[in-house]
Length: 84
Image (cartoon, rainbow, N blue to C red; front, side, top):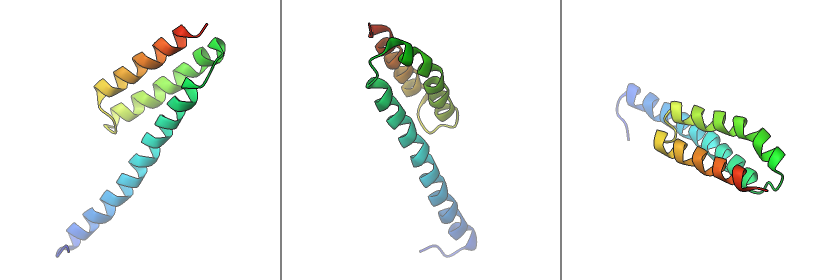
């Protein structure tokens, strides 16, 4: 157990941030799952900018690695282009 007040505060802050980060990363993953279920090309193309923004924001805040963000964006773009 922590002995200093600053350590106790750090534990509280870390827990709040962890929950916050988990919420946003889970939201992104669910959005990508919903995107991969789309069958209409127009729907997919319309939803790409919002997905890009979501992924870029998480990468900027270092919730996901920038290379993972690039890989995700590449994969969803290829999927959108492959829909006929």
